Length: 231
Image: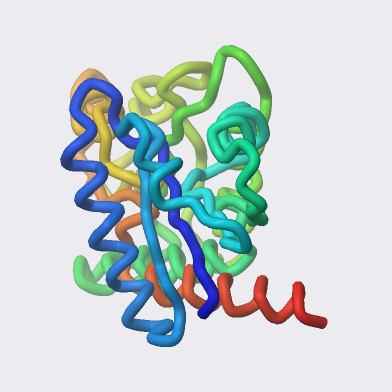
């Protein structure tokens, strides 16, 4: 039986809720892959990853970008366990189309004209390296290709352009799409605070990792990764 482990950062200050949310996602993925053993672990729960790791497992980083956690922390935590670390969730080439469908649905529900809509991609960014911002900008470009019409720009929690500054000039017919895998403190606190400072009048959307169809997308990626390793 193939084994896959969904791994996210979690919330160090309060690890229980993100751990439960990731476990729920793992159950949804397992429903798509009944012949698989789908496990989950956040890095914030001490010992959790080590407990669920096993030789031969594929490790699916439920992260939006490659970086320190995926290239340094994950391998170190996995230690001698022989696993295969896959591409992070945020770099899935099919993710922009999924997000485009979600944005398109909201635009239709509001009876807005696509050409009049602005989309703010609210992302983490990083003051320590370029990978987080590069992933957000790349996603925004791909989202623009999948969803012609709306103006799409990025704002960041930890670097310029800040979410507050990117949101300030946006019209009422705007959507804020948080480029995060899970709704942690940044999404619950920092993003709404920045939008409030900008007097943002648009509609905040769920994080990308909670959009409809994410479990199916992950399952498809796992199937593809297993097929690639078998060929």
